[in-house]
Image (tube, rainbow, N blue to C red; front, side, top):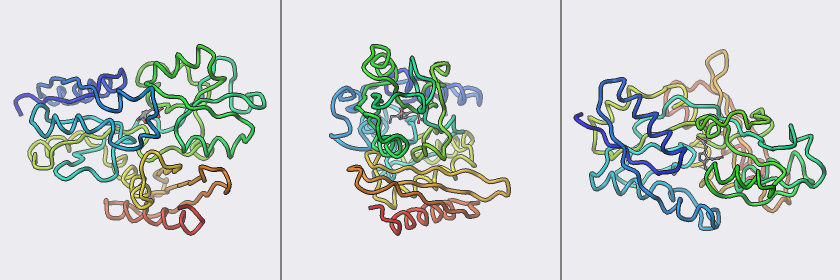
Length: 301
Ligand SMILES: NCc1[nH]cc(CCC(=O)O)c1CC(=O)O
């Protein structure tokens, strides 16, 4: 390829991710440039994102650029990528995953246990709300929106006692020192795809897809595929109170843990796990679908 154009959102994290892929492609001898775009998701970040709903808000403008040939690839946080891409688009690969855990950030308190009764914790993810509620029902969980810097600023201004964010974003932006606790996944089960990057292309760009496959991390691609299969089988969007996290076991099997919480808080948290060999995508998908079936049997809907 002569020059590869990466369409990217212009938040600091999105730019970091695009630069990261640029560097990986340059190492392989390609010339790469960036095309910065503002998405609908960015425009409404500070408003009612979770109400407007859903997946795809950060993705659509980037897809338009691919469609029109203004760009060749789009780099996404896999967590924000819809389970099923629109007709004509494909996920060319998933890269090696950064830390998949959720992190607690707080100027004053060193852990969740150290938070006083009724402390105010910021997050807008329904998944984090239901998981936090199960751990500490006394906490006051308040909405928190905006990109990473905005969220940290709101915390530092005193609007919250603590906030919960993805560790991956903090690490990528050199803000790791702000992490008080990276939650054990068994305590705060991550979202499907959290910490991983996916590269989207037009499905008809076979040569480009071939080239991008060399950047893939096969193990992380398979495990995140299993996680995404749980979301897909649950009819999932990122506004669902659903967690799914897959880990390779020492014996080479893939173990998936999934959790679902009732947003109204009337039913207890449902947690399941399943284990299988997952050497290919069909097996990974089947494992995720099994976890989803177990969730439903246990009362998730
Ligand atoms: N939904 C927003 C979003 N999408 C990806 C990340 C962080 C990095 C990642 O998971 O790859 C975040 C922020 C957060 O959840 O705190």
